[in-house]
Amino acid sequence: MSKLSKHLRPFLEYLEIEKGRSPLTVRNYDFYLNRFIEWAKDPAANEVDYEKIRQYRLFLNRLEYPERGQLKKNTQNYHLIALRSFLKYLARHDVQTMAPEKIELARQGAREPAFLEAMDLERLLDAPTKSDAPEILQKRDRAILELFFSTGMRVSELVNLKRDQINLERDEFSVRGKGDKVRVVFLSHQARYWLKQYLALRKDLPTGRQADSPYLFARHDRAAGSHNDAEAQPITPRSMERLVKHYASAAGIPKKVSPHTLRHSFATDLLMNGADLRSVQSMLGHASITTTQIYTHVTNQQLRDVHQAFHAKRRGD
Image (cartoon, rainbow, N blue to C red; front, side):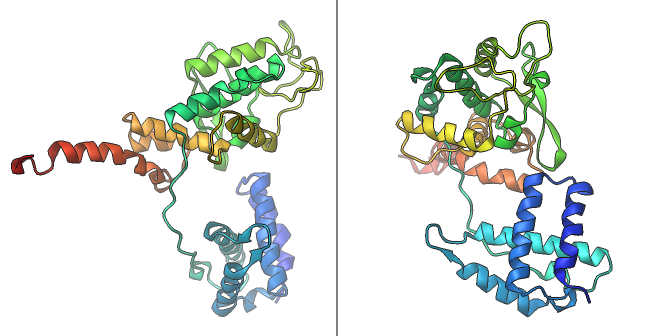
């Protein structure tokens, strides 16, 4: 019986080609599965059994880093999900191994997404235009923050946006998200305004000829405020995360703020203003309504109002 490591590369190629998984997902699966293979000393596929998986779960649960502490339950589950997918692939290719459905995931507590209250959100959105950065950076960064809040897009979706995807005469456009799924997102008036302001300063987008940089958001030289770079490159996901963190700090927001916080704020804002969960699911691009249900906590205030309005009215005050 062949070793697990022999099947790993074909599996990763299957994820990339047949399943259409993103390069990041493939890299993560490679990391998770190599960790198991190294821990288990590269067993044969038929040597993977319930006891080995139980021992591996104990290993993951006790794994601790000096700077980060123990692995979170959801991170442990990512390892197990990758292993389950690998075993499913092996079974499909007639390789004898443990039944993948026998791998159970660790129980997780209910997630409560972090979001920004209205005043903090406004301070964050205003922060770029109150900074001392060059004008093009002020307007680019304001447009990025407004677009995050207007659309609820993920970082990977926003950095990959191309200029020709967006028609600023319309308030909607399509974006390709997780699982290669396409959905429609909508621009607020503010997002559209700041996008126009930013693109007007992009010298690599002259009127009447093809843009040198196809990306909607390009890198710029912060020191010089350069916007005449013919080889303008897209801003990276890591830079976008640092950008959000920087402006949250500048705005005096004490909590940890990331691009995903703005995605949470987008969903929370919709629900608090009366949107139904199915519509929010579609706008976020969630494959399952279960994922969207983490936002139902925001209706607590509405439930309080219902309780006060209708509970025990016959008993008097």
